[in-house]
Picture (cartoon, rainbow, N blue to C red):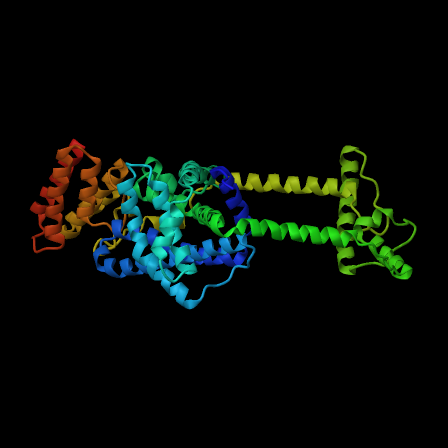
Length: 504
């Protein structure tokens, strides 16, 4: 039977809803470590000044996690296929697991280059995609001719696979747009409702950079990975059913189970019911709370949980007192008096006053939150924020102070004769100026050359870029080299930074 791609996707979604927690845990154990390691690797390699020292070790770890991720997803696909065949998911044997790991590690790195090569032709893309997704499943199921079987399975129903890829591409685009919107919407909502000022708000338009783009792409693709795995299981199941008739056997098993149930129900029999047991069960059922409204009101049932009844009585007394107070103050009719012995049933008046109390409490909390947003900073906090950073420490970062504060520190150090620290404060003031203009993203781990490359990417004004390069050489010759720090070198650097700012 040849169903369409949309029908196959619908069956894949239904299969995902019935997959046991064990299979999901295996998928998460393989996918999450690799995804987190990949994001950390990209951030570290693009921003850290010591990335080259950790490149080899992190690349090896990422490669191992890459192989384990595809192995875990192959196990997940195999579990989905076993459920389609009416079998229980089972952990594969150790030789099959090791074989799958090395097959995935050997073949999966070629997926992206091959897809880039065949993508202009368009037609082979569905078969190539299915081939790489079938490799792990075939490695778990067979110990030989793995590549041949994966390619043979990938060539079946190429048209259906094309429709599936188009629908999944549209779903991926929707997920991508929603995730990209969340990066901007969620921080604004936090600031509007709770007054939380985050780095995402301060970045503003610079939030949408290469880092957030990579993060959004990776997370959106990872969210749809289970659908691809289940879809491959469904496609492989129906592709194999053309030769082994597994789909017909599954349908016959269901039909046999239904026929057996109908046969059991059709066999006449005499039900033996004990009248005393039936009466006892009915009496126990009528004592349940949901049937308390039907019980005799004159009968005082045995009190349950005395401490809980005491709490209910105290709450009822409090609301009675509140009603009498409202009557005395405003002349309104108080709520009816609670009958003695508050029952477990719902009391309409009690619920009404409880809702009024909760609403008043919520309004009070909102008012307190709004008032707290306008509180001034305590003097102790302001004094701590005004503490000057240690200019002699290499960890001093330009975002610790505004530009004018750095310039003031530079002038103070120059007046005291410490021109080396004065030139460092002047350098930090210039970087802070770049950050406020939005030309660079200030980060403590960045080097001067990294800031220079970022300026070259974002600016077209060569005078500013040349001025920064000249000032950086003057500063680093004194701070890291054997240059002389005196009034002349300080004034030369100050003139360079002022000319650069004037051009900027």
